[in-house]
Image (cartoon, rainbow, N blue to C red; front, side):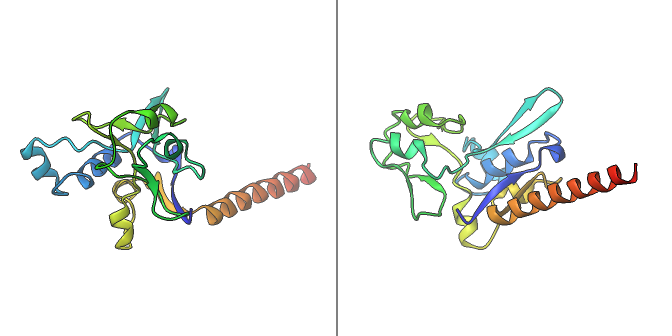
Length: 174
């Protein structure tokens, strides 16, 4: 996959603005007040889990060999291309929940009406307009960010290398 959503756990405050932005983005109007007044329950596709004193935003990993795609008997869960996000065609979903059982991260939920399932689509419509996913755009601390996996891994390797050099230099001083 070219780009994906990354998480800097140390920056998350647990404010859940990512969950709200996701729900609003997936509502029929795309507006908070309209969704509230209509009584619509679009559901969010990212979840902030509490672990001790930490808040951890968790989302679909859009696995390369996605078990949910393999488990779906109707082909409702699919990719439009090899590097794209894992998507759900709600009109083809029969609500069997095989994908829910197959997801190793627990990131597929049953819709409020129980007729289909919900999962992160990485805001595919926003991506087509050159925008970031709604959860990323809403994150006030930048705990969520949208980037290229190769570039992000390169940054991590550079940090590790810098830390090793610094440690080596400190040891040589002593």
